[in-house]
Length: 187
Image (cartoon, rainbow, N blue to C red; front, side, top):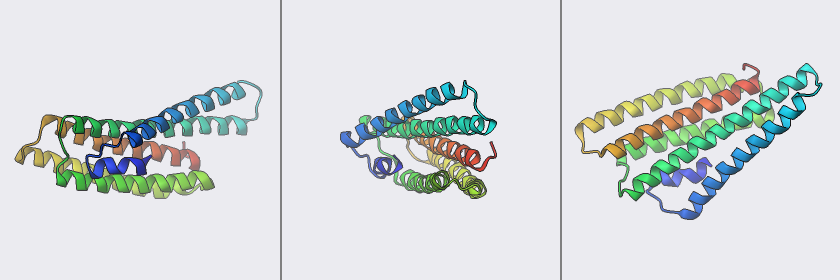
């Protein structure tokens, strides 16, 4: 989903087919989360070992976190669509920073996804380090944006959209960290 989202940050892209694909993938993740939750809740209501109970809870949590990530990806998409429909564009400085953050968060998700695929228990230490760097970067970019708002003509809608996009990337990182913690047995 992150690869499909990137062009909407790069340029005020108007690609209904890709938009539909992103919305559809988010809907699929909603359904997958629901099905996992229903199946495992039913399974865990029966007599199962403690290990099965813990693994089931972990899988429910991971499904919930991935679904939340998809919600934030769609939030970013909706904000870019809203800007485009209002004939507003993201300034070059904001665009460069958003792309940088997008790429860092994408790389972060790839790290966490690999940890999930390989059940790598030590993924959380690297995820925390990279996650802290992403949080710092997001705060730096938010501060830069707010400084520019004071010196440049920026529409209130653009300013709010940039802030909301920055926050959405941070939330994506937070949910990915939660996944890494579950895989590592920390949470």
